[in-house]
Image 1 (cartoon, rainbow, N blue to C red):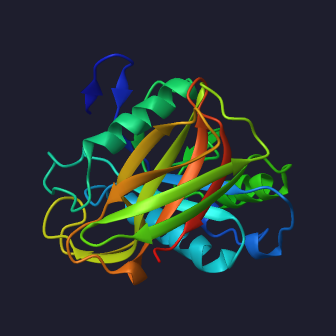
Image 2 (cartoon, helix red, strand yellow):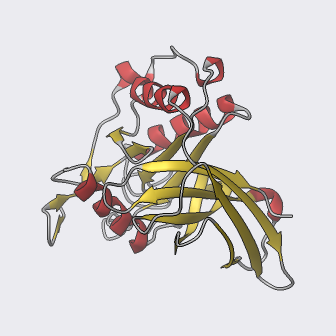
Length: 255
């Protein structure tokens, strides 16, 4: 058991609920609407319950096609001391998960956890819950319309242009830009998943926050060495800092 200061955050690995995972009803591909779904998964290579959640979001990612479903996988760092340091872990993602615990009135954080549109959370391996939340987001009324363009510069940076329509810029909202590695395969040598080869999808490698004092603008993001634009994308979303609700999202490739 791991305790964190402030709210009593307890890192708990939930078992995979097979009855939920077997459900294949309400396919995302069949849903129509003007909404969107931002799916945020909190996961770790050190957690034996997490591969099922990683596989589930990869399944949904393949299924959605061109629908406005945006998947982000954050690798938290509180499992790193328990036998295996996650290749992609970042303390910033643990802090983000703690922030959601505050917004959603939770007494603990755990992996795998999924949050959809900043409003609904559940165990990350529950397929029925994920499909229900994604479909509800797609069927909801349209929120703020966010458009993005990523222009790769010489060197390891890119210029990001953003524009927000259908929603006024507000001091209580921020624009978050997630640099996402689409795929990776890692062989885990120790810990709860020791000896397993894990496939990861939609890995957040950097998360940058900007105040929305105006509805359009530009910013710069750093790119990793050896950057291959074919395996990366940028996902942006507008979030209320008072309650965590996400009002709009979009994505772009690097040009």
